[in-house]
Length: 518
Image (cartoon, rainbow, N blue to C red; front, side):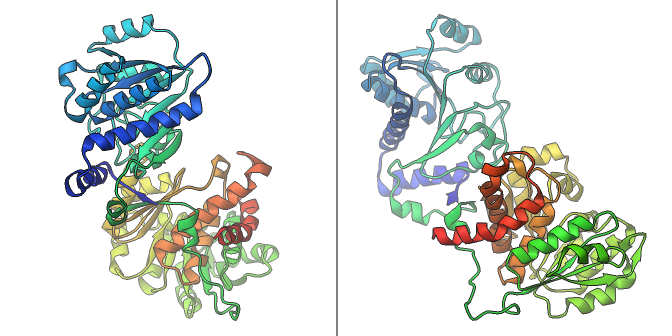
């Protein structure tokens, strides 16, 4: 599903108005009517249908006037509170403000915080609050009267419905511009917006409904979007074909470099996820002292013991690793590998001396800190990095708080600068491609916040790379299946206590379920 920036949505509106000839006031009427229909169908009750509409002076406020008028027609008691002087309301918004007034709508204009609280203190209770203050075009932090209004809305017990996007969210990035409305329902128009589906903005959206407001199909189809929301249909289209005539050599051989003393489990989980992800063969390279523990837990995975230094693989093993890499379709590097100087040097040398598609995670990422120029030495190679925000902080030099504040742009900018596919893990994991395309994952839940989940994802991505998928397709499908497997286990485990090993065993069933839905 296409996801737009605020600027792209403005361009869509302009095409519908200027090229197709649909008046803006018609689009505003359609938008407001669709929101009113959602409110009436969900919240109308006998004897208590009282709505408060917060409206701004722009087009989002214009949508609010339409909503108020339609709710009035459905026997709601509606108070419309406009946080602007009457003369500040212009254009299509002014047309609908006049229409609301002519229909007997109660409209109150306030310009100060004292006026705001004077009105609210005198008002009766409301069954629904409508947030029509700011749309997706907000470009500066809120202050004063608007912050007070948002703070008041967030303290109310009744449902809050936001029009297009909760006020206070940057529609293009998901940044919070001072504060944002905590909506129970957000009704957006034509397309989802980046600020609604990426964090931190997504925390404020509640249930998201995308409403058809009459944008012509021609405009919808021709709209180019750099971001896509990955749902089941999108993920299903990425599934590799499994030929009935295939054999273990048909479905790829993954080479995994992982494990060190005390971190044997990471290697085991990544290797098993590689098998459960559908690779025909997986070979694990690990320190000699770790191999017996790995062999005891992995019957199907081949292993190659490597010389070690203080429990970690060392530079003297380079030639053995390069020999093992011959004929392999993909590499996975990092889970539990350790952070010693020799390990880091070895990882960097492997990136220079091999050419297979590669996924790098965990300790493999640490080896790249301060050496990111290596990534640009093979511009045509599929390289996937899978950092969590802490890893991303070390790689980029940004604070974790800075990354979490603007995840979309951070992921996109890093991927385009270093020509890699970047998987920025977390709620609504982002997958960014070297060309600036960004995919937003929709699966997963809080139960995935436990040790080993990243190791599983690394093995799964490597498996799909070995099966012939491109870097962006492998990363996108792996992240989706990873979250889907967790969702399938949620009824049993809830949001706490889910283990990475539980998820590994669910991966084949999740993949099969995704395929069967189609």
